[in-house]
Length: 134
Image (cartoon, rainbow, N blue to C red; front, side):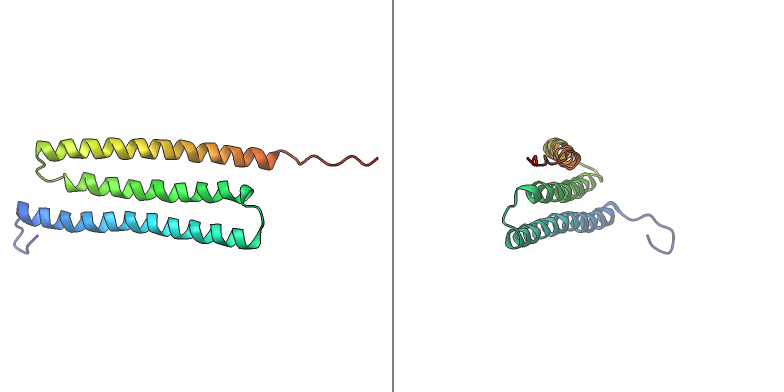
């Protein structure tokens, strides 16, 4: 906005939104990248310090899944914002397709995270069998 109280033009709004879209999409990409680096570092560290990755592997996948879900949410927010100003029917169709794909991906990731979490909690509740002293 200018000092005289005029509203910004459509091209100015589109330019501002374009900048915001880049920022939001970059944030989503950084979240996914940070999650991948973190998961790899944890995987490598666990492999060096322990012989078995079985117990830790699901925890690492669960954490990586959380990063992916959050990053995808940011990417979807960028797509929605991109079509906020005077969208064409083609842009609305593309947004619908992208939103559907990302929503399905998010749904399945969230469901898998919940299953992994339940398995981990169940493993922690179940006591290990003790050998019988004869």
